[in-house]
Image (cartoon, rainbow, N blue to C red; front, side, top):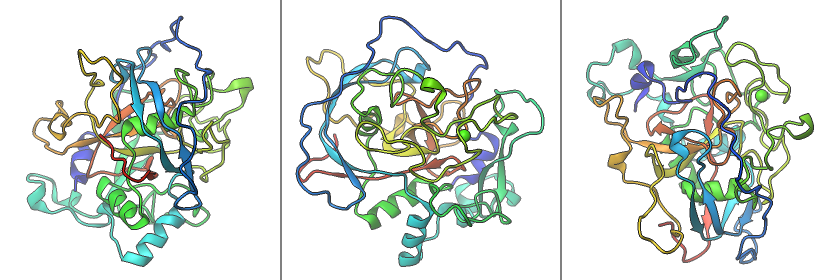
Length: 357
Ligand SMILES: [Ca+2]
């Protein structure tokens, strides 16, 4: 339960050089090729809020943006059912009501698990977004992330905040074990990174965005991201300062909402800082599962042995000047013991007899 670790090195929105070139390069496919094989759903959805994602072969990753997205490579995934929306506060409240579940953020971390942690950090709490009043060094995440005692899914900005009016917003401040517990209860599992990215592309193989090759075609925003100069200026051109209600933007080609923006989404894969591509293979790997857990630790903090999962999709905090991760290929590591104000999730149900990896 790693609240203390994040006080020294928040895991969300990894640092990057400010003003990095946009990474456009010619010669990439335009990505208007819907219709992957196997598009027939295997029948009625297991639950009404699930959408069939047909599976197929696609270009996973990108060679045009951040190094951790490379190399772009062909991957095949089987079809599966996916939650049409991100799990909302109302959904999560139902789970907690049924089970009495207490999230990681709502429990005081054990001193034994965090030797050397300051006692004042060993209290329930989470990592909240606190916009600074002036321009800051974008390499230093602590300029906008703060450890807030009492913050958690019921109190996203701290004890004085509530979910009133945000029942249909995605739940946040959920760590990996919280997500797994919810999905067990709901009869779902997390997608692999490959399944998630296939779903996010909506059939537009090779496109930059979930909806095509322009971030805001015709000036219209198709996801909840950040316009203006992060983290001090939010122009709200997409209508939302922080999270938006699930389903506020049009669905992608598979009928899925908000895979891009709003909040990052947990996947089940362990993180590595590049894609693993099997050498000497004739065919696109099927249902890849990413690297082993042992490869997922943060090399920058060798004293901290908390494994990290891949999160996908970017969030309301992704801006052109800071974190251009509002794309299907984008990815980021997240320590399993830490939820933040901009990470949520959704589940999938695999067709009978199919397993990832
Ligand atoms: Ca926004």
